Length: 248
Image 1 (cartoon, rainbow, N blue to C red):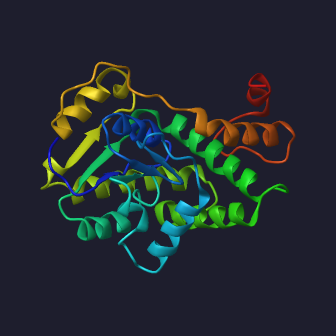
Image 2 (image 1 turned 90 degrees about the vertical axis):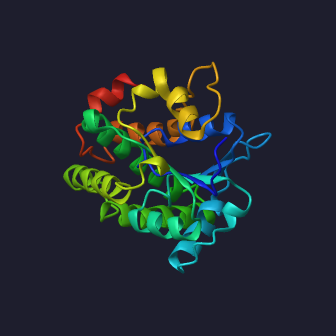
Image 3 (image 1 turned 135 degrees about the vertical axis):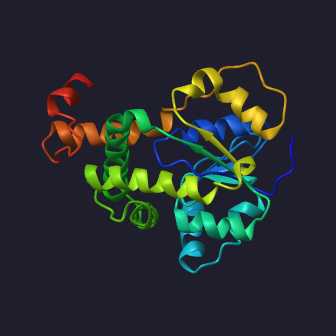
């Protein structure tokens, strides 16, 4: 495997960040995705406190992250915030970066983002939520504000933020192509994911299907659809209550 200090999956949320974390884990690397560490033996369970601690450190401009003392890298927040990428790049020189894009299916991405963001907020701030859950939700809201300019989901604002972010990544790594792996279409992961990833890391390609992890998103998705069916929320991305009924 090629030498590097850390590896950061800087793809935006809902761009296969969990699947990429699992793939890296199967290659022997430990990757922290929000509150879960993929890779160890066995994978470490989800722990809100990991994400909360990252938020505390980022907020105080401390980029010597505790989690990276035990992990080889990060995926999703906070690694998909442009200003944080720049700071992590300075803190951990010689690191590698991976971006997965969904340019050709932005409407599907927007609906996926809405289900996840709104559904997770419903879970983490509901009647059965704990103080730790609510602190986790506040940390996530802050990270989302730094990515999308706001915490409330708005399709046009999020669409604009998507393109702005991709432009940032393109420009930032324009003279460092060797440091960045870009998967231009999420659909390529199924057929070419491991080949591209292993070539990037300079390891032998493994002969198994690329992970396609959706289990983590099921509780937020179901919370969102239930609230939509019950009329407690409206979808801004075009998910209809009738469609929600079909998913019962």
